Image (cartoon, rainbow, N blue to C red; front, side, top):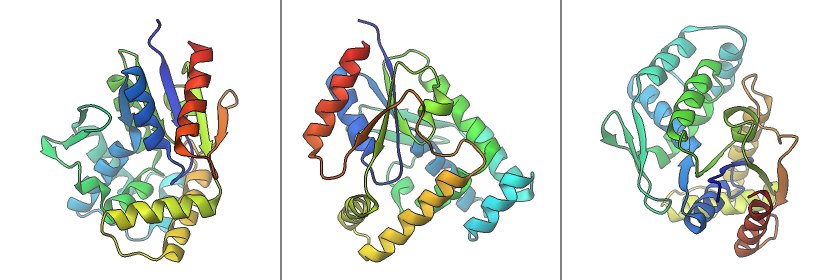
Length: 237
């Protein structure tokens, strides 16, 4: 059977990575979390002292002209060695030889990732790295521009969506489980800001590919989401 390239896109908190891991496990495929690369580059920016404390202004500057912030982060992205190893349930992320699997999930890394992801040159470098990682096929990759930019010819394209209320609840529960003390209202505002940044950025904004299959996960049990995704994949294989 042909080893497919499966692209999963959608907004924050919709369940992309959970679904991607489940599908990869069922099919024996490689799972690649594209967001891990942006988070790793965001951590590099933080550790290098690049100012990302004004995300709106930074995004506006970097999308309209090449500025010092964009140049600095793009340089970090080009030089970074980022490896994703292990299976879908035990994904190890190393950055320049250092294990950052837990580090990239902290709130400051999430914030930095959402800012650097607006930078066109950073996105180009991440696309190059992702394509290198996936050259052998048999891949499930999730993100926000996988079906539109990274793999426009993917064998299967899924676009997950859900109501803001559902996504807020899911993300709030995830953050609580990680020990973060955040209110559900703060979580909703964070997601709204991230949605706006993702959909309005100049560089490959979040949108559904014309040939992607929409799965609305609102009020849908996770087992049913997996079943629906596998049904779609079976039809394309």
